[in-house]
Length: 476
Ligand SMILES: [Fe+2]
Ligand SMILES: [Fe+2]
Ligand SMILES: [Fe+2]
Image (cartoon, rainbow, N blue to C red; front, side):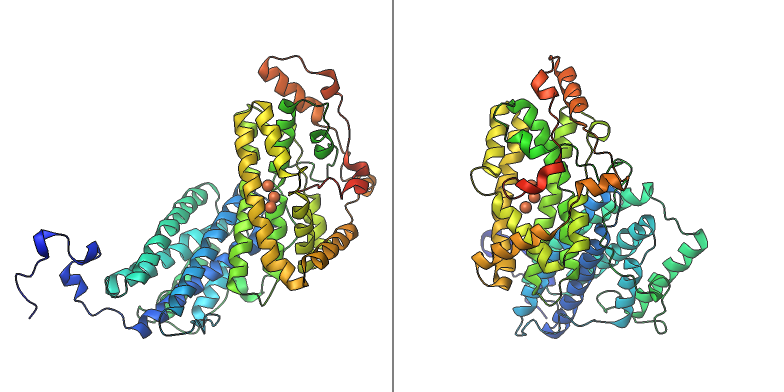
């Protein structure tokens, strides 16, 4: 019998506030059971990360690309937290790369193999994440809140973002129906439920019922599609008709108009998640922290794109009408280079963003323009770029040897990439229309200003950009 009338001194909250005595006295999960569940939580986050990464590049809808970038970042971070926790429990974090249960594996393969965006959303946000949530909740219910407090804490943090993802997904599912026939979808939902039952939930703690797992969509393994796709708001994805950097670095051009070019450059950063996803998807054998860092950078690049989007909206400009955002960089890198070579190019370009004529310059233009939002975007864009340089040193440079070799190799790979302005035109893919005058005119109209004839006349395309790629980066 527990001691009756036991209470903390002065009636203070007991046990540092983490539990009351009755819950702190319960026999919760043993270390073995706890580690088993932690490994399974880890596995679920890891497979979700993989799904977001693998489906991002070829997903045409910009909003989904952005959401997948964020959710991949969340999943990479939480997977890392479980790995660390397992390492704290008298067990080296071994066996983390093993599939916990065959049915779990098929479950995630099925979601990964969904044949359209609506079905994919349903699989991720309607099936996988709610099942993961239930597993995390069950861990909280089953474990001793004091004795296993470090796990409890990690789960609590994970639940915040799991709930955020589920809430996002519920809204997305409501507006993006599956393209599958209702009977196919019903059979698939039944299959996913069956797989979950067969593995006893993602945590394996429930009753395991059912036969050997079957496959539907994943019976033909889905290979990673590295060719970027865009939605209808990107009607001219080969357009290289407006050379943003030449304008930006032209001292005669006014800072206020340059903010437009910077919003364009930010929005164009959609191509970096598209490209980085391909590096992450196709690079094998790296430690988990590689995925954590690379996915953080991927999410930063997605944020930069959204900063550009917000900048245009804030300025009252409908970018869908006035701006042509291309995908030539991610397309060329993904289809012409190996993963390490893509990373080399990314590193090489980002190195070039650090000197005086890089991110600091863009921030100074933002300050000089009087557009405080532009300055704010550039301030953070610059800070993020410093982090990316560190990530490049940690994961790319170390694979190559030293910084000098890494830069040389990056330069070499970048020179090999064929982004062929002329051939895009010859093949009828684009006319490289100069969209700048209409955008600038709209900007002036909104501000009630007369367009500056010199600014309006700007007509430099990327036709000759090859020559100055080294001086003027075309991405980042
Ligand atoms: Fe950026
Ligand atoms: Fe970057
Ligand atoms: Fe960037």
